[in-house]
Length: 118
Image (cartoon, rainbow, N blue to C red; front, side):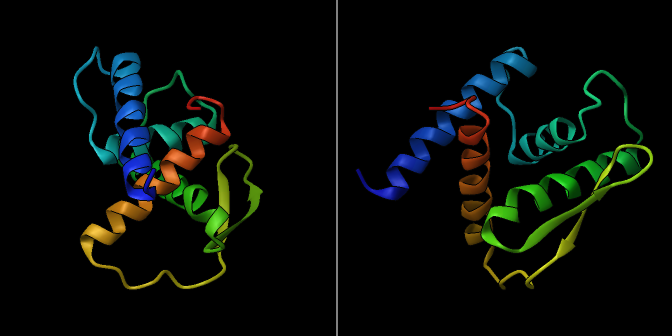
């Protein structure tokens, strides 16, 4: 099976599972999935976040998702339990569609690693 086909199948399955679990079946957007990864990584699942914290959660998620690609490296948890990452390599200049594919690939890999997807 081609890599793109496998990614699409896994992405669709992931969206279906996450949408059922977190959005009563309403389809989630890419940004919402990134946000969920940020909440998962922070580990403070049952709290409400302010707008600026939501942006930070998405930043945490992006750092964590791109860590296996060598772009970021985990540094430490601060006193409030928020993870901090260091930029290891500048992100490549990608077209919008290429960015989307990279993020979907990273997200699918993350959920496979967490045993949420096979």
